Length: 373
Image (cartoon, rainbow, N blue to C red; front, side):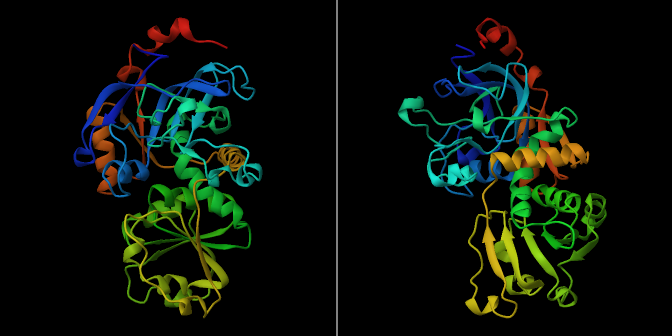
């Protein structure tokens, strides 16, 4: 059929064959008056994509097109859309809808809406078409206006893409923790999430310390803005840092292997260890007594809000912040290379799938006479 009745994407057929992608058509949600159709230019590759397709986070509806770090051009807008016009370069992150009526939604916490719909793998209600949401390894994506964000002109698309999830996921807790001048921030893990956390925290004026078990990442961590690199593989690494950090952002997804009391001993009085890495396995068992010596606390968060997205993009634009991105042309082989690189931790530090026009050569011709304002 083709656009706008169907979109085309690189889809995984089974969690048993998670490295095998097949290009095929799928049906999007029903187009509604606050929806925007986006012709995708590029899409970041998130750890969530891997955890979803390989079963690390449990079952998922198949076949599935993942990808929730989308940048593209608005080619169709609903009658009630006011914030985006046709031709605008926009982004979509890990959430594509919320009710906008509940208490979280009305307090700029729509990322905690109990009715939220994730960008891929989530079912739309019947009144929206009853389909499964499909992600950004695709020709197009259909998104609600509230979850579509205009991208500043000076941020290249391949760099903006991973900001839509990895960027926001790390920026939001830093902002909510009041990170800034006079604060000492520890970032655990120098990877896709962690490298953004270092970039943001440093740009926000904090004194940043990178904690990693990989000494080879020290140079990159300091280029991103870390004052010190702490090798957590060293024996008794934590002792010199007791009572040091006001805020610790854990971006690693191997937390189940951590000696949590050791990490928490480095927090200042009433400091917080905050988790945004989501491992496949549960946290290690921990006693309440672990929190007592410094009155510390532990928390976690889920992506971020629309206002936080715009604040993050403004920070990146005004300070001309540069993440470390590798580009891979999208194709069946390219998608396999990307998720495999995330799985074996060979990416430095985020992949963006590019060259969508080559992968979907007919989309402009098919949709040209169907674009409306």
